[in-house]
Length: 94
Image (cartoon, rainbow, N blue to C red; front, side, top):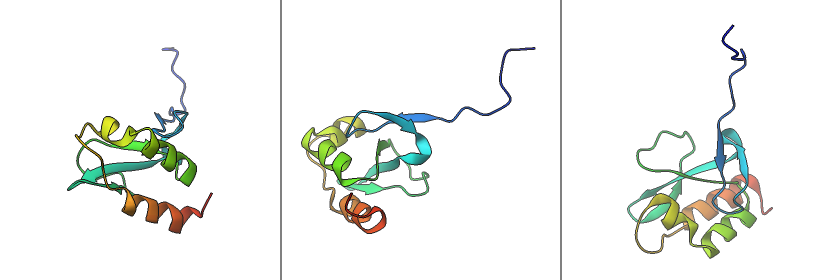
Protein backbone atom coordinates (compact mmCIF):
# COMPACT_ATOMS: atom_id res chain seq x y z
CA UNK A 1 0.00 0.00 0.00
CA UNK A 2 1.17 3.50 -0.76
CA UNK A 3 -0.25 5.10 2.38
CA UNK A 4 -2.68 7.27 0.47
CA UNK A 5 -6.27 7.49 1.52
CA UNK A 6 -9.02 6.85 -0.96
CA UNK A 7 -10.89 10.05 -0.10
CA UNK A 8 -9.83 13.14 -1.96
CA UNK A 9 -8.30 15.91 0.09
CA UNK A 10 -10.40 19.04 0.26
CA UNK A 11 -8.30 21.96 -1.01
CA UNK A 12 -7.92 24.80 1.44
CA UNK A 13 -7.35 28.49 0.85
CA UNK A 14 -6.73 31.44 3.16
CA UNK A 15 -9.26 34.25 3.48
CA UNK A 16 -7.54 37.57 2.76
CA UNK A 17 -9.83 39.27 5.30
CA UNK A 18 -9.62 37.23 8.49
CA UNK A 19 -6.55 35.19 7.45
CA UNK A 20 -8.25 31.90 8.48
CA UNK A 21 -7.88 28.77 6.38
CA UNK A 22 -11.08 27.25 5.05
CA UNK A 23 -12.22 24.81 2.40
CA UNK A 24 -12.07 26.28 -1.07
CA UNK A 25 -15.81 25.68 -1.50
CA UNK A 26 -16.59 27.90 1.52
CA UNK A 27 -14.72 30.91 0.14
CA UNK A 28 -15.50 33.34 -2.67
CA UNK A 29 -12.83 33.72 -5.36
CA UNK A 30 -12.23 37.25 -6.60
CA UNK A 31 -10.29 38.49 -9.61
CA UNK A 32 -9.39 41.88 -11.07
CA UNK A 33 -11.08 43.00 -14.28
CA UNK A 34 -10.17 46.51 -15.47
CA UNK A 35 -9.26 47.81 -12.01
CA UNK A 36 -12.34 46.35 -10.34
CA UNK A 37 -12.39 43.45 -7.90
CA UNK A 38 -15.23 41.17 -9.03
CA UNK A 39 -16.55 37.83 -7.75
CA UNK A 40 -15.61 34.74 -9.76
CA UNK A 41 -18.62 32.56 -9.06
CA UNK A 42 -17.61 29.63 -11.25
CA UNK A 43 -13.90 29.85 -10.49
CA UNK A 44 -12.99 29.99 -14.16
CA UNK A 45 -12.11 33.62 -14.85
CA UNK A 46 -8.53 34.13 -15.98
CA UNK A 47 -5.90 35.72 -13.80
CA UNK A 48 -4.72 35.55 -10.27
CA UNK A 49 -7.43 35.03 -7.67
CA UNK A 50 -7.85 35.96 -4.03
CA UNK A 51 -10.23 34.23 -1.66
CA UNK A 52 -12.48 35.79 0.96
CA UNK A 53 -15.31 34.51 3.14
CA UNK A 54 -18.64 35.66 1.67
CA UNK A 55 -19.32 37.86 4.71
CA UNK A 56 -19.18 41.64 5.05
CA UNK A 57 -16.95 41.34 8.12
CA UNK A 58 -14.19 39.61 6.15
CA UNK A 59 -14.70 41.87 3.14
CA UNK A 60 -14.35 44.98 5.32
CA UNK A 61 -11.22 43.60 6.97
CA UNK A 62 -9.66 42.87 3.58
CA UNK A 63 -10.41 46.38 2.33
CA UNK A 64 -9.11 47.98 5.54
CA UNK A 65 -5.88 45.96 5.39
CA UNK A 66 -5.47 46.65 1.63
CA UNK A 67 -5.27 42.89 1.14
CA UNK A 68 -6.84 42.66 -2.32
CA UNK A 69 -4.20 44.65 -4.25
CA UNK A 70 -1.45 42.78 -2.43
CA UNK A 71 -2.96 39.31 -2.95
CA UNK A 72 -3.87 39.98 -6.56
CA UNK A 73 -0.51 41.68 -7.22
CA UNK A 74 -1.87 44.84 -8.76
CA UNK A 75 -0.79 48.42 -7.98
CA UNK A 76 -3.07 50.92 -6.33
CA UNK A 77 -6.50 50.63 -4.74
CA UNK A 78 -9.24 48.47 -6.25
CA UNK A 79 -12.95 49.18 -6.62
CA UNK A 80 -14.84 46.58 -4.55
CA UNK A 81 -18.42 47.83 -5.12
CA UNK A 82 -19.41 44.87 -7.30
CA UNK A 83 -17.98 42.43 -4.76
CA UNK A 84 -19.75 44.15 -1.86
CA UNK A 85 -23.04 44.19 -3.77
CA UNK A 86 -22.73 40.45 -4.51
CA UNK A 87 -22.01 39.59 -0.86
CA UNK A 88 -24.92 41.72 0.39
CA UNK A 89 -27.39 40.24 -2.11
CA UNK A 90 -26.47 36.58 -1.83
CA UNK A 91 -25.25 36.14 1.71
CA UNK A 92 -27.11 38.81 3.63
CA UNK A 93 -25.60 41.43 5.86
CA UNK A 94 -23.66 39.13 8.18
